[in-house]
Length: 122
Image (cartoon, rainbow, N blue to C red; front, side):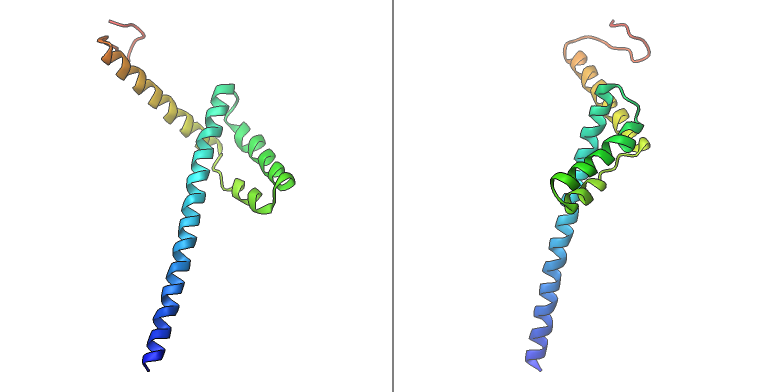
């Protein structure tokens, strides 16, 4: 009876450790996908291209490259990068807001007053 209990708990411990590894891998994949999404959105903004270029051209091209140069696993990982038009638009807007906030903070530190309604420094 004691051996059965020990075996049961050892199996459960092994299952738990395996599930932790899977969760960690999924979280890392998600974090990498998120960072890649921001980086590609920034490239789209800098190139002044339509937001749709990420979903319609960049993502399929990256998948093809990964399939040819690496393997299917790499291509599948690339497919998890969120690059829909709405996502790219939201990321660019978020980054623009962050930049505006930084500029306003720097102006305040410099002792200048900034009005967001106009483009005049006071």
